Amino acid sequence: MVRCAQRPLAVPADYRPDGPWQGSTVKPPPPSVAEVVVALVLVGLAWWCWHRGLIVTVRRGVAMNRVEGSWWAAATGAVTLAGLLLLDAARRVMGKAS
Image (cartoon, rainbow, N blue to C red; front, top):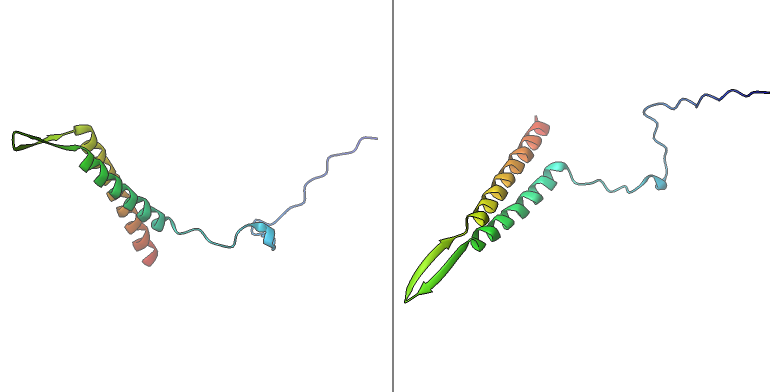
């Protein structure tokens, strides 16, 4: 005797079982908050890179500044990315407000 495969039961698309096993009830922060936090970290990284790229040497009583371009390029890139993240966070917040 050959048995046919049974069709799976149809489950409505909006079905959500109730129970504590579903996971945490704590909602993650909205993406705009996460973007602002990452932007602040990037600004701190840019500050560090900028100061790391400036080398001051004192010879015979004269202070000379030397610039390491790769550190300043990294700082510029970090600030640019932070600005883009802040613009996107503002766009999301303004989009939800209207």
